[in-house]
Length: 274
Image 1 (spheres, rainbow, N blue to C red):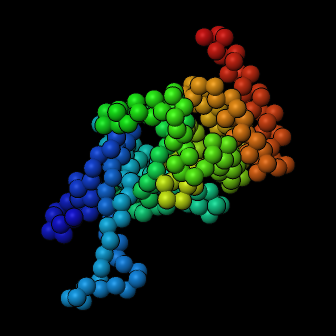
Image 2 (image 1 turned 30 degrees about the vertical axis):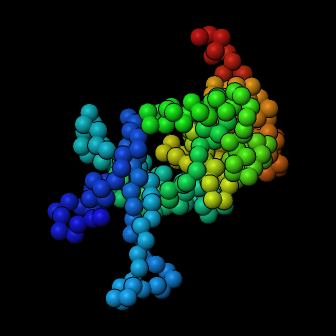
């Protein structure tokens, strides 16, 4: 709960009360709660309007001391605003992404909807995430389930593996039709929502606007490499993604397919050179 008497800016107060989830070189990620006034008109016995606490994910781009302060502030504002713009453009185009809850470019904070579910990486064989020590036991359990074939965690969400690949292809196609390039398409940056079993694309920190076929092909190639490096025997899975993508892209697919073949060839040549 925030204290109105504190001398700290409201965003800093919110961060102080939030739970740190992860930290990278560019940003820290927190889980926090925002006050949400009831829209149902419900009041307490004393006449006060009921409020709910909505969970949100806060992405905090902290200050980089190795940069000049003015440059650091400028880059932080640009990146927070750019990620928010990409999310807004996706939402307007029907791409399933987290809703925006707050933007503070001066403090370097973007607050988005908290998605209750699991990443696609966690749900597919070989991809249980070990980034958080607290998830180690759960990840081992997930891998054991996959290896023994006793259960498919995707089935708990009421969808099949093929249906999940279709959803991935459709969401990426909608994003590319809106000329948004994700920049970091991996199975870690896709989540299956628990309540509705829909696929949500997340983490648009590297996203940008582009109409270039090359950029869309590279986006797909990055995802293809992520499948290959993270999930064993993933060729049929990615083929399902591309099939759904092709159907949604229609006439736009052929030039992207040709460029994707070129990008793959360049990637193989780089691998051979070392």
